[in-house]
Amino acid sequence: MTSTERRAGRASERALADLREAILDGDLPAGAHLGEVEIAERLGLSRTPVREALTRLAAEGLVELEAHRGARVTRFSREDLDGIFDVRLALEPQATARAAAHVTAADLAALDALARRMQELGAPGPDQDLDALVGLNRDFHARLLALAHAPALAAALANVVHTPVVTRTFRTYDPDSLARSLAHHTEIVAALRAGDGDWAGAVMRCHLGNARAVMVEQR
Amino acid sequence: MTSTERRAGRASERALADLREAILDGDLPAGAHLGEVEIAERLGLSRTPVREALTRLAAEGLVELEAHRGARVTRFSREDLDGIFDVRLALEPQATARAAAHVTAADLAALDALARRMQELGAPGPDQDLDALVGLNRDFHARLLALAHAPALAAALANVVHTPVVTRTFRTYDPDSLARSLAHHTEIVAALRAGDGDWAGAVMRCHLGNARAVMVEQR
DNA sequence: GCACCCTACGTTGCGTACAACATCGAACGG
DNA sequence: CCGTTCGATGTTGTACGCAACGTAGGGTGC
Image 1 (spheres, rainbow over the protein chains, first blue to last red):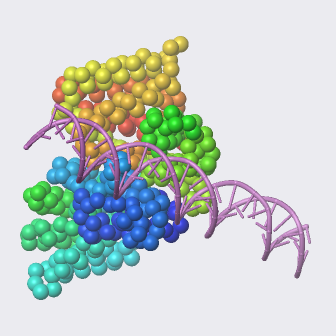
Image 2: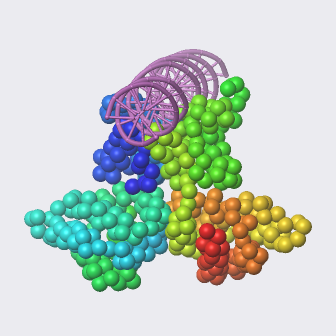
Image 3: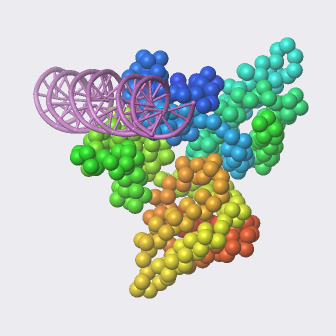
């Protein structure tokens, strides 16, 4: 999600995407040790592109590098998480409000489809699939952020909101909080359709407040 | 290339610090082309650590990498600058307000010294030294940010507020704006001394508004 | 038995060589 | 004379080898 995706022939790029995906999906748990040689062999590359990928992941904050002791997937404490929500609350409502000025009919349709699908998958019952929500949620927020047309704002968020934490915790939502969260998405779409940025921003603020409560309680 | 040079610290760290300083101080102007070999030879290193430094600078947004075409110092448009101020306005006042809760007498003394020195150096007359303000200003804001004890907030700002732009523009302040700006620093110290975070945050908001006006007008 | 040192190992950090790619210039053909 | 193509050249991208560093384990001295 960084703005510097344009470099590096396939190898380094692939290592970066692969590692990021593995971390975000939880295949590499927090605190896991990442050896350069191990990763390189697993991807069929040399250490060089792997090393570059790790450097960039470290800049994003997804991994931590210790001198001569390798890389570890970053661990987040409750305080870290709280600080992250402070930043999100300061920036994401503003971004959402701005999105109202740029949103097109096609964007609305796409966001609406995502929101509705999430409500289907999140509804209690045999068809409930909390894991599938993860990707959809990421997509929804990413689209919203892009619609703000505020690159600096997006960059600030991207380097702090390490979605692995937020992403993998849908299972920890209690039924009421989950229902609220999914309803917020739908309400945001409604607000954007009405062209009311203030409304959309306010809903996002609710959305984050609700999420923060779940996260903080969980730990 | 001698073994004594290497002892000073990790090569890539030095390359990173050196390059960042050169960009922030304007020795490397915006848009300047950065060749890996050229930098490597200038620093007496191989391309490897230089390359790592460039990768990290790209993640910070200070340079842009184009595939097989090298790195360039990032150029900022007026829109970019405006977006950066949006982020600063969303985060820095909050950070300043939080600093009030953690500030110690020693911190206050250091901040006060910085603010007073800046007022001396900024005052019109033969002793005026606008260039010296640059470093002091960076230091002041960095200390303030650290006092907030909010790592996520600091990280979000660090990856967006590319001070090169802000830093080198003290010469473009008109006398009134400059006087206001320096007075704000002093007032922030006063607010912190009074333990009034709201006041401190409000001053920071003024400070940024004033700076934004200067920047936007300038371009 | 305990503490300390010292050695052996695995890891990262850096240097160097080679390959792939992009750009620019000149020669050729229309 | 202009456009196109092919080669020359410089750059970045990748692989690999060596050295430095940190760590752990065994051995020795007390």
